[in-house]
Length: 69
Image (tube, rainbow, N blue to C red; front, side, top):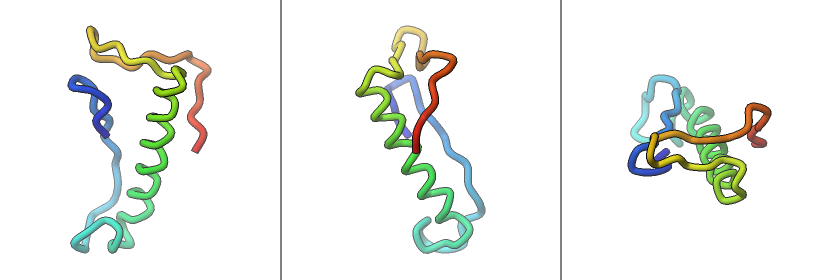
């Protein structure tokens, strides 16, 4: 997930055994979860629950902040 020029979030998954993640039983659940997490992160950025510090290449949020997926 590309947040900005200096911030990229990587998601983990299984070994892909088909041409696309949607076709692969090993990867599909991780792919779907990554999509949900990406949407939740973007929503939190829009809602200002997460802020982007471009100068330091960091995301800023409260310690108690939780994503809802």
